[in-house]
Length: 305
Image (tube, rainbow, N blue to C red):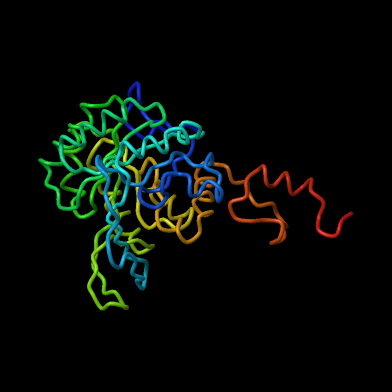
């Protein structure tokens, strides 16, 4: 299966599976490599990176909600130079494309980040994350700055609340694809300190809201859209594809059950075998691939000599 998730061109991004982790939940790929098979994913989207190093947020960083979780991290990272130095060798050996997420800070820094990434063989594309309070004119300036300094495709992750307003201007500015959307922002009371904490909201409740926005945008603009928000099962991901998304990004379920990311990737990538009639529960696991099925058939059962 070959899925072109960006606009056609000599450097368009083509994936084998339309499933990838969302930026901010998967680190830089090294943390989860012993838990899931990275080669089953369509691409690796890195944690957010800024031109200069950023420190983590102080105080409370995670607040449980009735239907999800609120996270306030401050986007800690080493800065682009140290991040590339630390991970380029690891990324270069991965059997899947790497999309480096950079944070839109100012035009000059975006241009410098894009130039650095353009020279990196280990990185295949850029994902530009726009701030939640950005106006369309600044968004256009940021996207154009990235596009001018690289020949690699530039995906743009939109803030949910302004997705309708920003989608067309960002598309016209040269974005190769849109990611809809960044986790929405919210405020919740920390049950321990009693303080109100602002952060991003993750959880299944986000999906119906984002899904509608994706469906609306599909009918308005002619650009590939990647759906992101609240995906916790293969069916959740398929809902985005049915709405017209070209691919999906999976976020918070990765923290709860890392293997589910691989299950979703296998399912949407056509790598899951159909359950055989009469199979017992101990003969089947959701997300089972052909290799696993064959191995179970030839391996002796418990109690056999």
